[in-house]
Amino acid sequence: MSNRSGSIVAIYRYPVKGLSAEKMDRVVLAPGECLPYDRRFAIALGSTHFDPEHPAWLPKTHFIMLMRDEKLAQLRTHLDVESGLLVIAENDRVLLRAQMTTAEGRELVGEVFTNFLGEATNGPLRVVMAPGHAFADARRKSNATTDQYVSLINSASLAALEAAMGVPIDPIRFRANIYFDGPSAWSEHDWIGSEIAVGAVRLRVISRITRCAATQVNPATAERDLDIVAGLGHSFGHTNMGVYAEVVAGGEIAVGHSLLRVSDT
Image (cartoon, rainbow, N blue to C red; front, side, top):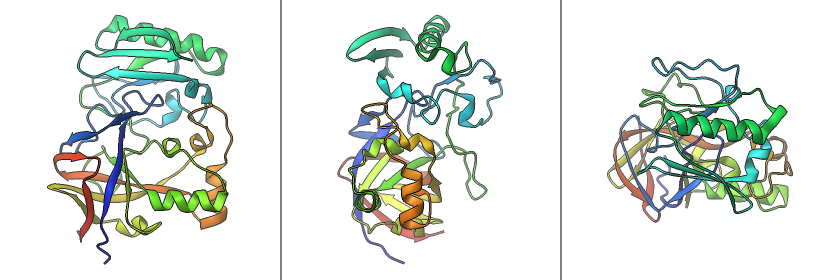
């Protein structure tokens, strides 16, 4: 077993599923949970049934998403988790400031996205949420003890894809939580079942992440300009980028912290 260490180079969360990444310097992780406020809210299609009293995992096709709605990348959003205020802007012009903690605020957000996407999606759209629930892309894995994960990407694997495709690739296309460097490209694929240590924090790697057409969308221009899935398949014989892990021991992690594969479980 290779114990080659690395370090965290970036941390992100995505408070509203399908919308802007929010960069973080540090975050406190809790056992069995994803990053605080990661995928805390989602914007559901008019045809989507979601019961906040009995929240259940739903495929991302039930919500607005980059895989289908690339126009979303034209917007920049920011959620102040302390106040619950969501700001939605396009080309530096604020479209809405609304409280995601109130039904009235969530209704306003739904209206903005219904108007913004128009006939391109099944409206009217509405914001959905439930205490303790995260709108993750991946359903619960058979080898996991929770349905909330942290996603990690190896910078060397991303660099290998860039070299193979001959173009720079914005890491945000992959919407991961933790980006790290150090280990060799694709070595993270051998970590399934292993524990990763970041100080006192322990993450147990449970699966590779299979990529979809959402990665075609340039997060800066909202254009579908790269076929990432085809590039992965043609150059490496798989369509994976990154791994999912569950938090088994909590604590604070930060950019610059060392990351080390420590054991097989």
